[in-house]
Length: 107
Image (spheres, rainbow, N blue to C red):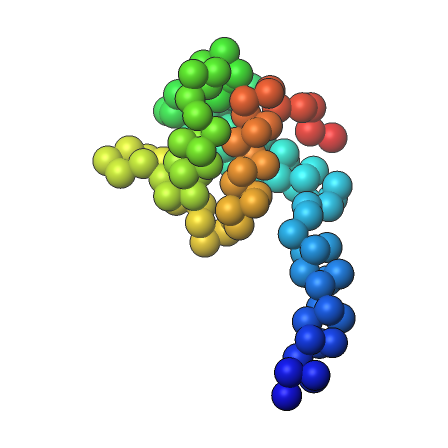
C-alpha cells in the first residue's frame, strides 16, 4: 500500500504547488474587486465613505494579519461583511498586502 501512495503524492505535488500561487489574472480580478466592491463602501478612490479609508497612510499601523482577518470575517456591528465564502485565505492575504502598499491602478 505504501508503495502506491508515495508515487501518487509525488505526482500530485506539482499541482498542489501551482494551486497555492495566484495567477496574474486572479490578482487583476482581486484588484478589480477591491476597487469596485470594497470601493462601494470605502469610496471608489478608497479615501473613505460609509467605511473608513483604505489608503496606506491610514493602514500603516494595522498588522497585515488584522486586515486579512477583517476581510475574511468582517466586523461585527458594522456594515463590513465577511468575504470568507468568496475569497481564500491566500486571496485575503494578497488584498491585505495590496492595501498596505497602495492599490495599483485597475485596468
